[in-house]
Image (cartoon, rainbow, N blue to C red; front, side, top):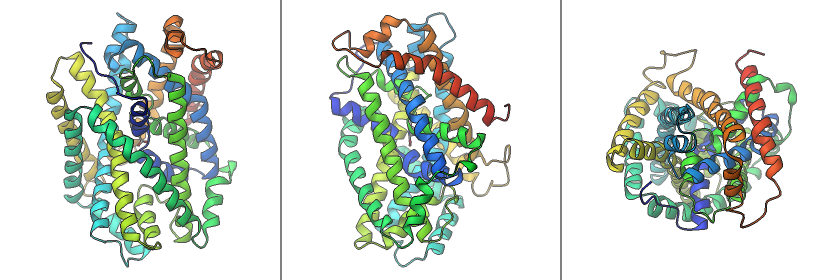
Length: 447
Ligand code: PFF
């Protein structure tokens, strides 16, 4: 590709990849999936998925991206010309849009909550009032759509401005602050009365709750949280320079992402039990419990402003990475300017987001397979498209990709040795495809 850019620094590589991985998936989706799917047992299955499937597949995506220096469609055209592997590209684009549809709506909610925090809108409200406020806000017709629009506008300026100076710099500053804040909130949460019940819900596994749907959802959550299976890491990998160590980067990204998810759990579940909210509450979990925690803290005002600011930023670095998948694809494969591509993609996301938002309120009765469109987009993307993409990627890298390309990528052209080649290949060739297929079949009720 003509003068393709790369990330500027080592820290920038980590920050961008972690910025993509850490987002609403960790702080909003992970706690409520865990709450609805068995608590501690879900956590253990989730961790297994991250280690056994997640890390090897992150490496696999990085290898495809950096060796081809192409977007998700172009990569397979280059590496496997004349084959159908570029179907992974089309699946990725579809998954990006489905995720963006509901994700951008949720990100819009975080902007509204930032605004509320600035107005000191949580002060003096009881847990019930905070819950009712969330329900009435998220089901109204216009307000969430206005926030969706504002959030998408922010994405537009970052993407058109270029990934390097905007997102890379912002991630470098914001991600460490988010981390520190989460730790402070965890400490407050575990010192609330009745907190231990929440901690045992999070950490004590009860395997009697595990069924095939829990397995499928834990795997889906791992893919979602690691930004895996839809070419996001192929695209970002294509911006890595030849010095970036792929194995080490994959390990760092997976570890930090998992740490943030666990911290979010420690922040949320003690508060959930302390305030008498149901752990299986669903998408409103964060938006109800977190303001409650702030109300119990000295300086609650400033904490809440900071928290929602950073959550919005975390969402932004993730949506930008999803947009980048499609923008790079359309820009490079169809010769459309970056700006034009971005405008089209953001407009389409606005339409999909509006549909998702309305499906929680005025269109609540219109369900497909018993799910609102918001939930359907979420379910299909996380539990079907991402693991499906991961399956194809593992088969491609495990059985089709030239071994020398793999070794060159993993060792940066033999500039250092690695100990993990065999276990990695084993995981990519055998463990990942077999596990994904088994979990799929049992989750879909076939076995
Ligand atoms: N990993 C992001 C999160 O946890 O919020 C969501 C995401 C980003 C999913 C990018 C997929 C993706 F390609």
